[in-house]
Length: 101
Image (cartoon, rainbow, N blue to C red; front, side, top):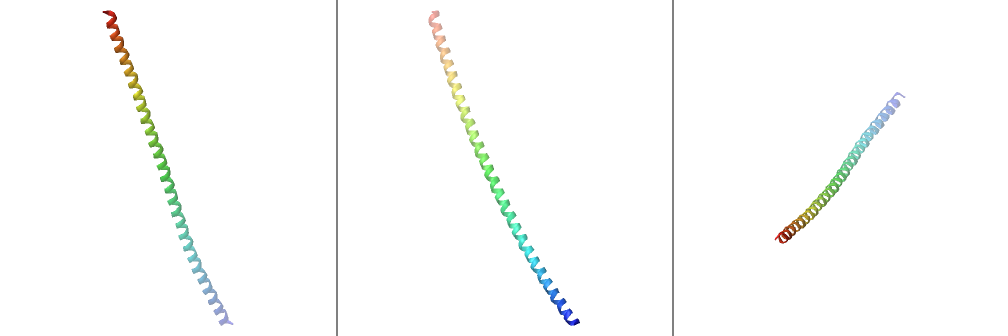
């Protein structure tokens, strides 16, 4: 009877140790999967951030180009106005000289 108890205790101890080893192995697998999932999530977030930055820079670049184009248009308009003003003043001066003769 005592011998049977010892054999049962050893069998139980062996089963517990095996289950403990399996639990540790599962824990390692779960941790690896979790780390891999976190790594993939970090990569996705990094890619999304890069896309946002690229879109922002593209929009900013387009905005800068638009501002430059508007500035050039304003310059052309100002030059046209100043050319018109110059022509009118020259015309006025030449007419003034003719009429005062």
